[in-house]
Length: 466
Image (cartoon, rainbow, N blue to C red; front, side, top):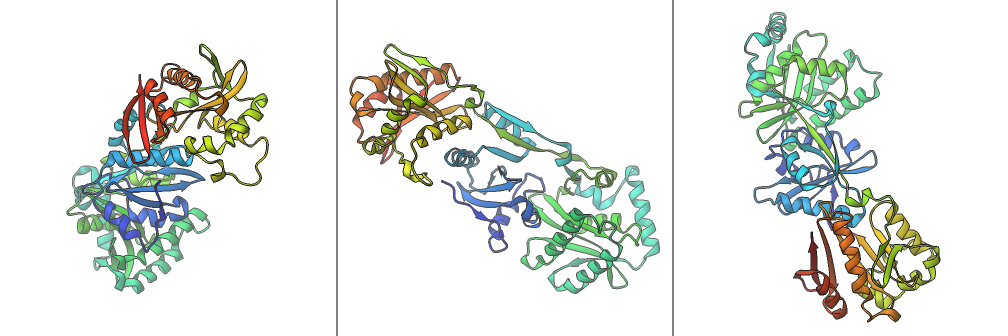
């Protein structure tokens, strides 16, 4: 199972190595956003199959960024690992911040999903050469503002900022706060504090920064991060008292740092009307969408557990009348060894009479599993479970029979019925199963119902497809 570690200043260099090559163009695929908005994103990461996987906890919900492959990265395997982690941890699969050019792949990948792409999430992408020159009639407004600024402050010059300029930057923050028009806005105040923290990280070498000086004091500054062919502009600030400083800063920053870039991303507008108006005035070449895939599964379609009939058996939902037999089945350590799960691993508190029945019911309420009682003449003699959905049309099936009813073919009969319903009633594309290599009875049962597809040191693996 994937193991994650929080993104911190100490390990952000690992993350930055992937972002430096990333061509997704979206602002969230940068170390700057992960650090600047860390209190909101709660991001952690892992590396697998040569890819970076970032997991965020936003408003209490787990959401994954789209995997970022390194030079030899296997994007397909990284997606499989995310899916497996969600299945094994009992977490709904959400892929958020998906670049639009990856959407078609996911639309083909997942049979059931909800897709969102809100206008306010979209990033403003500009051609680097457009902002560096403001050429053409369409940019006459920006040029007029810049010309006024140059006329009023002919001595203004652009300077590249490094960690050695901390005193100059700190003086700017003091001047900026003296004019700050949103001082009573908690969100704006937080954003300003995050911006200050980012400038203190210039020594890390992840960012590029510059500013406009007048008489030895900064009147505007900006900080960005180069990610593939996109310059992610994380911070843009200018003194209100120096009219035209803002567009002058935008142009100078693009001209100085954007020469080897195709795009400048000035990020989204966060539902702010003023920001939207401002960003549109600079005439973006594209609004880059960020798509969110809330992935579902076939179990979500079920209103209740269906009853299945075979020649000798009935499979139906577990009920109160099954409690004694079901508890005996779940407490049978010999059977649990071949079942591959020990209830003690997840047990919290005392084991109650209702525990196993309650777990089965909760699993169905969450649509994680379908638990059937296998009945012979109305008596519960075993259990069939459809579980471990893989989000791509597949699920795992398991059957266990009470020891006193073993050897009569009931397991095979129940398994075949459940597999048939899963494929042609629930409309899964495949059902998988496994058995321990020492379990010859299960091996014979699965071989009669399914096709063997592999093995490892512990298990034989089987599959049945539509």
